Image 1 (cartoon, rainbow, N blue to C red):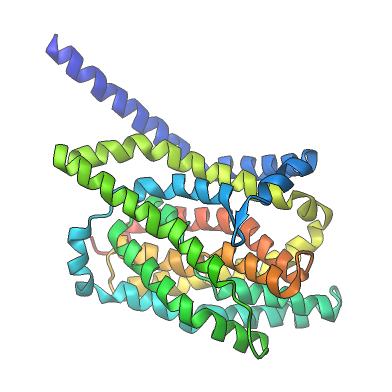
Image 2 (cartoon, rainbow, N blue to C red):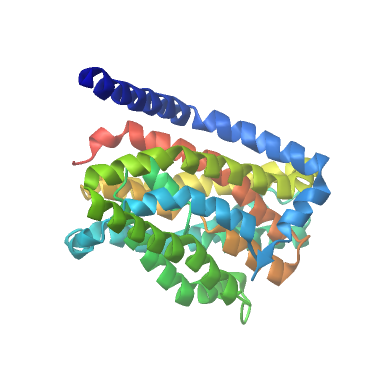
Length: 358
């Protein structure tokens, strides 16, 4: 009898794990369906989503904040603070992240914006509009990802603690470097950076989930072991994926009418973003391979450099150029491009895991 009882839960867990693996394998399809659903819902019920979009504190949307919390809390439970003392033993991942994010990415994004909108698309877009689109791209390029990178790291089975350190250091650098870099690239005297938005976003997307995850982990370890932590996060994993898909629906519902009204323009804005994303990932990922950085560190380092803190970019674009500006539209297209691109890069990283040292 005891054998039967013991086997059934095991079979149940195996079945759940297999179902979750199948779901993640087709995650790109589910994201595509959620994009379509968001666009449709935004067009059918614009008033409803306008009301949801208005639920903001310091220009941070509370509904999006809750969903991102759902996404990253299970990953934060996996963070083992005892291993933080060993971070200095692997400085190469941090060197790649900081160099790519602050020494390369903002400047290549600005250069690509000028190349596409002032040279390649010169006859297609009025010069005044082109400048605003370039400004939006620069804002995206100067804002490395804060929250979603935990999802991408999780999907590549990256080192959760090391990912946290990489993101935290980027956040500190962003406080001091974002405004000067953007001001320099935009060619203006000063940039009105919404500091309350930046600081509140970091608190909502990093500090509070981390504190909750640490408290949960400590409670689980007091009652059991690391196996109990793994079992707990395994049960929460489906909610993390659901949070990602719900976030996609919400973001595209907010911008659905704008995106559907200008499909050609959306495609033109997306092209330099695609070149930038795949190019930056290639630089960071191949650098990690050349340096023989372990995959669990190299993959998150490359993904952090590729993805963007779009909440900050959108807020600054609206503050500088207005809600209906080309700069604001470009940052929204960044959201449109990011999820499918990042999922494709996660898949590429997982398929090439064997090239890296263990």
